[in-house]
Image (tube, rainbow, N blue to C red; front, side, top):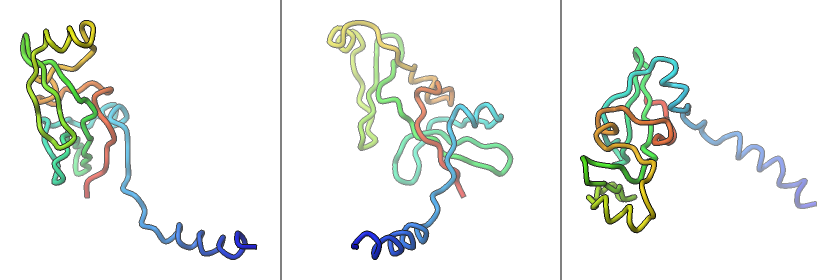
Length: 124
């Protein structure tokens, strides 16, 4: 009995929620000719890249949590938006060898791999 009484109310509540912003994948957008900007942070402090094509703009979050930096260094990105420098030899020794990580210089310059990019949201 309870289910039948609350079903219409639940349906109305779900239909009245605001529609989420359009989302797309980095792979789709880059395949459609969107230009990737340099690594930056949005208003919330989340690192990522701005993609643009004409007047359309998207912001794609950075998924990578670690990257190689220079010849012997590494960087790690915290959830608070801070970047910590690490010694590459020490990290690789602890984790058991070379890792499949991006180069920080490529991330900064706007050349991320698809695996290093999270969700993309359309900017208004």
